[in-house]
Image 1 (cartoon, helix red, strand yellow):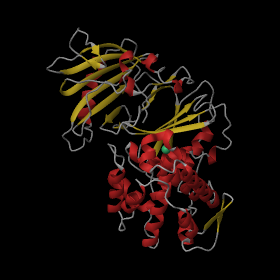
Image 2 (image 1 turned 180 degrees about the horizontal axis):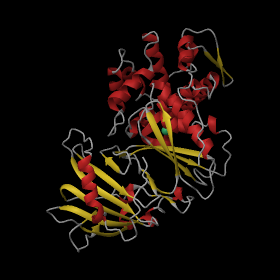
Image 3 (image 1 turned 45 degrees about the horizontal axis):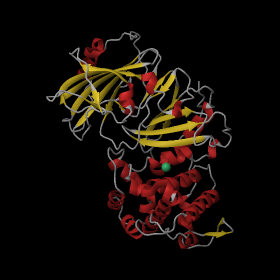
Image 4 (image 1 turned 90 degrees about the vertical axis):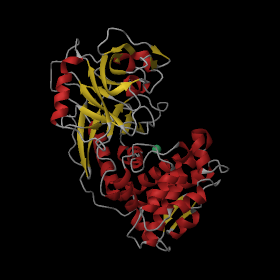
Length: 496
Ligand SMILES: [Zn+2]
């Protein structure tokens, strides 16, 4: 997911027509694998100038296009010039829509004020001058991408400038990308600049971590070792990393969430899976290894993006797995993991008891954030225990999620919770998921975990969890957090 243009011929007066024939030739030489072979393919060439102040796009469409929009309503502010490829006439913009001829248009050229677009999101304000981030939401104008259409985008960057994008790379030099239909959960980042990157090998994936440069340096080695350890941990859940090529972006910033946190992460599903980690270089990273941010974000990748009403499943499964796999990989000890889960369940129980998980998710932060974050974790534990119990240990939430990944991930659309739980039931001998959904998703309160924890041999007094030898399900408890040897050692990831 990076681009380092080998050609040095690009200059400020680039004319994109100059290299379109080269694109056509390269596409003929190595035809990309289109889904079903019948997709309508729009061909984009995207160029950035040396100073990264301008971006040019030439868009050639599979058939005449009458609607051409950008995801963000602010995108019009950054457009400098738009015209048909063979026309001197500018195309005007009205209410964020291009005024295209009724018969449609086959090819459009446009210019974007990239410098201005890169200042739009304040979270990137502390980047070094030769590193910028501008979401395609602000500059990628396009027809709708459907099940039957896609965009092939070729990036043309100045020498030494690379890009980090969420899209699927099609060639080994990673200059051509495929954009298909996706859930569009939020605006995805695209970074351009002279930044560092490292490939981290884990089972099932090579993760390219792009490390943007900030005004102040971050400890790249520590951050990379942290990402590596967590990537190994998540890869052990079912033997491989959930996505073979996610975009991973490390962004130095002086202030996220009111300057109180050293690290803030987010997962975006738009054009691909993006894990974006904001790190404050002013804060101590001493406790980095035990910081669960990246464990939580990687755990999200094990499920498709879910609709708002069922976000408690996304957040809850991530909360469950971050604690489980941090214990398995030895970053937490088992007691600490169960303590965290117990405390989470208690927070969830106290959070807006009059609401159901579905209601809390719809209301978001205002209506019971902790219920949203922890009710799904309780359901994940319940499902995991049931699967392990009925199969005498041969099945678990791990094995079922492994099958989900094989069949359905990365997903190109938003799922509902019912759809997910029905699918998980179809992937296991024992349908445990939908019974849990029917019982808890629309029921006020919090799933009752007290009895289950006791059966797992966990007792709580004064807010402290103790692991006991006695309990009907102690073997299952031990198996859930069983330490596993690392498949790939955290290694010499010295950053340049
Ligand atoms: Zn989350």
